Length: 257
Image (cartoon, rainbow, N blue to C red; front, top):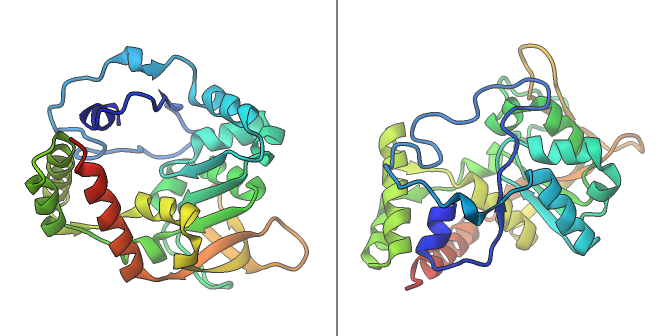
């Protein structure tokens, strides 16, 4: 992330390192080809990072603007889960929470396997969904219908900017590692859900994340009956509208000199 911000000439966005280990147990969060590994990038300047843990960093931001600070989770939910555990009142003071995780199935149905972000830290996912204020959850049922293609990577590279070159290189590297010609835009969908919720069809449901056993991380849903904490779950989306929005935004960002 620091490399991307540097390439774009952005120096006023603070970053902090998140927790290394899950709250209870989980699985390896990353693998070869993920998150820039294998790109042979120079290490970022550590002085650019906020020295505090991510939870302390988020807590300060909430305190500066309670009720006006939002949270978007695009990976394992460990940092958000720690915030729930240690500072529940501050967590409730968030304006809204958008989560990329899980996989919607109609009430009564059960997925066979857990989605990656929930499987990495089931305890954190369970805590967050049980308390998150004005929570929107976007799962694999939506994100797997989106795609970043090699054609878009070529467009990014053709811009001739440091940002475009870095994004194109990182995207091509990931596709090579996974043996794909396109990849879903999981994280970008969660961002869109926060800022453009009208692109999705939502249902208010009560989630339950399994935290133990072979199915740890699996999330199931039931209709709200006055009990349990209900959230907005994306059950459908205008995928062409999202793809158009994503293309416009990423090309605009990559066009920065």
